[in-house]
Image (cartoon, one colour):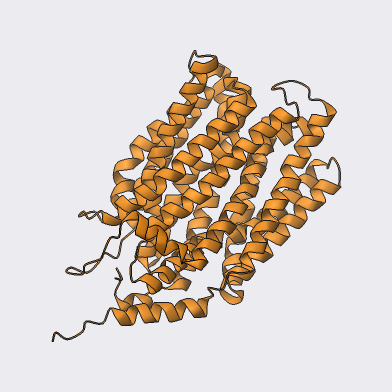
Length: 461
């Protein structure tokens, strides 16, 4: 049954809880963005991996990450400690997370198969540790408050800090690599990763200290169904299925965009690595500025309308970029900024919609399993991200990409399609799915009220 008392629906969170929860994703984006934007190019242009092999490695590791996520969610659901249910994973996992991230970029004297095995093993290790810390963090929102609007503001705070972290690390990474590479080019990425992850560790500790869970009341028993039964419940949770599909399609679009950005900048635009860093920093900065507008829009128009509107804006900007030919630098930055503004609507509503589907599932089944839901939705999301990473790697091979060389005209044209046409298709498909999403704020409020009514203690016979 419910892990929160009925009074939770009327209680407002103090500002320090928003700050603490937001700081968590600030730190996690010090890991997420470098892997999304720079890892594939590091594999192909620095480590020397074939682009197809590099893409498949990323795909395998992301799918592994996604498979681990639901298992972490199940374990987290059953965790009971004096530190809380979800917060201990942040406290005890922060340092191993930093170490495993640095290993991904550790220079090694391997070649061919040995190099592939090393890249695969180190990334699998990192993805596993990342899941063990990040999944409990994500599930913690559902245990902080039941109120849908409070979750909107929590999600807004989370994304505000997430985009801030992305902006900082997007700007800092190529500059750190360039600066550290003056003395020792071979280890520049490794020491950059070590510096970034050390700072992220301190921020995760701060997030742990400022957050608080609303634990189950003493004496309340919650049933923990087996995995097969949980999957059966989710198969009947239509809003969850719709949200998961829309998230996966947008994940494909966003990953293709971010992974192709360094290649597009260098070989299509003729820009330097710092230009990639400027774009990688500008995108989350614009999204950060868009958090408040999209949070307000979502509150007054509904999450579905905000989701669709944002993606249509992003798609329109990419369509213009595709049609203008080779843009000047200003035009490129403006169009990417408009696309980033639109996609910010997804970031806000992603983390608010998923907890709502938790309540829908609890209303249907009488069982609350937010950890499993968050784990499964990230499995779907990361599988989509992995498939899109493999797509980018294999597509680079198909169009004849050769690292650190002048590219053929057909290859250059293919890079433009990679950053515009394919993301547009993913975004439009995500819009189409969300047209059928019906769990609005009024419906959710009724579900929460009915769930709360079930928690009333009945007199003994």
